[in-house]
Amino acid sequence: MSVITPFPAPKDRKAVATFDRTELQRILDLYGRMVAAGHWRDYAMHFDPEVASFAAFRRATERPEVRIEKRPSLRVRQGVWALISEHGAVLKRGHELQPVLAPLERRLIRLIDE
Image (spheres, rainbow, N blue to C red):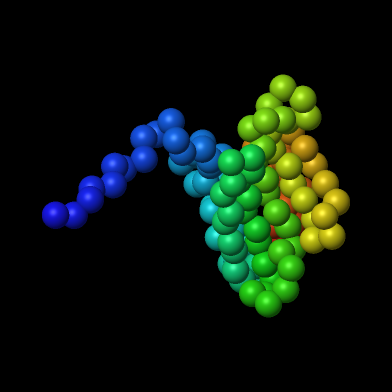
């Protein structure tokens, strides 16, 4: 006979930081508009116990142009959300996603001539 190994119980697994559905929808909406405008071409997501990260690339072979990070452990301090530049500098931090994405949204605003 064979030996049956029990499936690990939920208490054995570490909790992983993730984006919820509305947050991911908001991020992917921005990504789609940036692709349509020609700014971005690729993206990657990374999930760890401490951080969930969304990286946007101009080209797939480069470093990400920006990273949007969610760190639940900073909820009471600086804020869960951070917008990080290509060089690792924190551009914006906050408790809500909308204001953190505002610098990226501004790139999409164009003056339309009548």
